[in-house]
Length: 169
Image 1 (cartoon, helix red, strand yellow):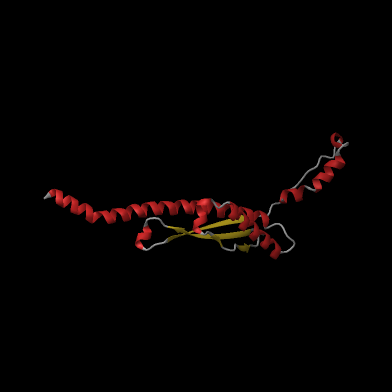
Image 2 (tube, one colour):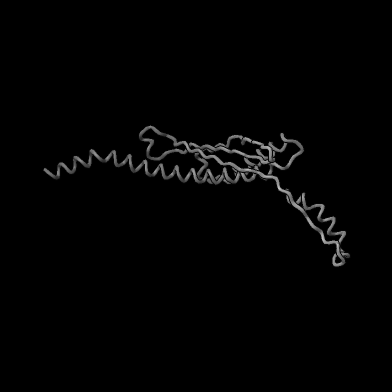
């Protein structure tokens, strides 16, 4: 009698055990997908913050930042995310009185499920958000005009004029 009862309980509990196992596997995959998606969004935010200072007008700077964000997002996507059809939404830019620029990014992906498809869930939605703040920087450069640099002072002066351009790139 106990052999038959054990078999019956195993047969009854087997679907629930399979569902729990599938949920554990698919939730682990969703967590990994979210981590990889966040890494790509984080890289996109850093690229946008760097590119927002390039351009003659606010519209051009924001377009440059959006293009840089999309480029870095695409480059940093791993092959594991390719089946999830990840999408980076357009960044939003907020300007405050201190000339800080806040860049908010959001990305989503629909990860295909393996086991919980049996329950009717074909995809698992994954989303991440990131925020980057670009703060203005004031830099002072002091050039030695003493006799020790007399021979090369003109070269130092010319190269120092290129410093702001080099710092922005």
